[in-house]
Amino acid sequence: HNAKGASYRYQHAASSSKLKSGAKTSKSSTTDLPKLYKELTEFQLNLPVDKHSAIFCRALESDMTKVRVLITGPLDSPYAFGCFFFDIEMNDYPNKAPIVNFLTTGQGKVRFNPNLYN
Image (cartoon, rainbow, N blue to C red; front, side, top):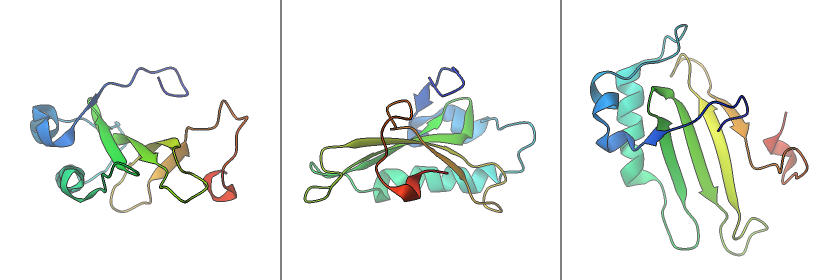
């Protein structure tokens, strides 16, 4: 569930026929869907996946402009063994910067780095 209580069901971008043929976006979005889809499918080959640190990315099945990302902290860093979740909204992609919401906060009780917060 996201902060607003909506249930997220994610589908891997490379294997989703919905994303290839009929993905929807927010009503006000002017996102370049073919470009976004191409970049999301490239993630399966280019994002680092290692037993000590990895990045995983999943698009919302019903709206591929909404993405959830999991980053695991690398060894020999203050973030080692941590799992850090982010929700990303890419409305008007690639013309505007994405809106990123850091979710791993323990309901606002935990802070990791001042650059991760508003």
